[in-house]
Image (cartoon, rainbow, N blue to C red; front, side):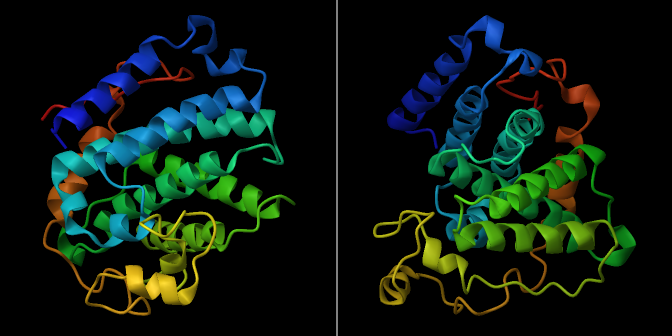
Length: 261
């Protein structure tokens, strides 16, 4: 972040939004799935810009848990979720989405899990409640992940793993499950988007092992223990998800949520 190439890329994404046809900014006026995909791609690229395209790195690299960084990542995941609901009304069977769109949805769902985790790993006496906006966004991601798995065109295990992680985090966050968090990267590590990986398609196990650069094994439980940042991050997420933060009316393609930093 902050390099000349990063700044240039961000400027290009900003320009993409500002040059978007005005008559297509309102979701209710869209008629085709590809119009929603154009919006999903922008938010997906912003998530990648502020974090990484690799899901395992997003889950395991603590640098993405810096307050400002996580808020920027979550901001675009929340905005992406607003695009998903009207998309489902256009393409109820989600049969027409491109692999890149699907990968961005999986990546965004992992961001949702990362955000929910900040509310589930706090100590009991100080635990904060996840904001409604985050819960709605997570449920929307869950709905489209389920729909994609029912589609005849989508067979990637990445969809199932993204849904499994989100289900666990959502159920713990809403009190439907005790804090028995149990999830590993045993399957996700075959879907790295790194030097040899391409995300949706699985890598050979030998290649995946060569790409694995963490001390813990892929079979180890993810997020084993608290980091000490959870309360600070949860407070920032609550602020980000506050209705008072929104600059734009609901139902429109949006570039950002106001984040006072």
